[in-house]
View: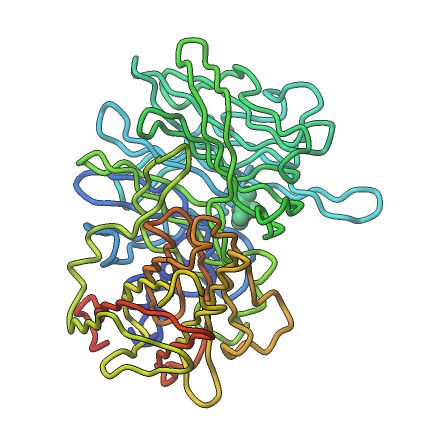
Length: 501
Ligand code: FRU
């Protein structure tokens, strides 16, 4: 039975979608069908297609009562909207269906596990959301909430854990077919931890242990965990709130954390030995991963940050977009990311320049556009006399531009969208330490879509992402060097072919 609330949302989004032209959206990044989007949810491969659900408020371009929006794709670049999957329509989730994950049941049905929220007021009138875990089962389009919901409540919490911070279930399957669920939680020390629950059928769950405690090291509450093995290591991704910067790591307030370590499945023991930010730019949060049928681990995050939401206006027809799908690997104990290889299918209009000497400003014929891939490698003309600064300007006209600049003497790469058209004094810059490029040799793979830039540094050792809402006629790209540098450039236009890009 489809509730009135879900029917309303489906009717509304269907009408609103028609009012947003394809040119008002990115060419190959997923945006909400209408209104607001935050975290990716239930990212999975199900019955021959990738499914992406997302935190969704269809009725306005701001966060409000959370629904689950829904889209499908065969290559993670061309997306088709499906009707919203969940609405907050039950007593146990009436104030929101928060983030969660999806698995395929042995009988082929699709199971979504999400956090149900019910608001409570304290003596001072402050609202707190009590969070429980709920399940819905369906066929890839319509989902029925389980009559036994909620399946995990405060009764299932270890001592000291908050019932207001208990969310974002991520289900994984063990080799024996049984299920584990990781959940973000806030222990008594007000920091974060990941709780582990076990189940045979996805409906009946029991508490197993605290998988890993933050002990106040990486921010506070840990949101949106994901957990998988990759290249012989075990990886835990989570998005901690309220992070403190450590050197050049963790500058985003609401940041991202990648822990790399070992996992003993029999003992259910995870030991983390390395940590890093997932993305070093301004906008990236709450990523989820999927394993492709050919065994690749692909990650998509929300290409926005809670601290920088004001980059979008309430009058805008949609707010929030997903990042590029990124292929993950571990090399030298670090997480590497590459744009999903299917993006090569979107390429056209190649332009290439070799050994371009630059000292000052430079524009190159056929290098411009807002849906573009740029492969740029830079080196000093004279290794004994390394240039001071190298910059790329993009989304540029007389009024607007964004930049990426690299200063080899400091080994710092900076993204700056101050002049991208934002009218708010929010964070517009981020710096990233690229230690290995102190000699002035750096490789950048830049993917621009209409409203985003994602920069993969040195073969994806670090990634810097930022949203930008610059008017689309600002499509210039130019280069600048302070000192003598030499660069090789290849450019492709990127388009899905659905609209003229
Ligand atoms: C992370 C988050 C999740 C929560 C959702 C609510 O961005 O705060 O922890 O489930 O957003 O929309």
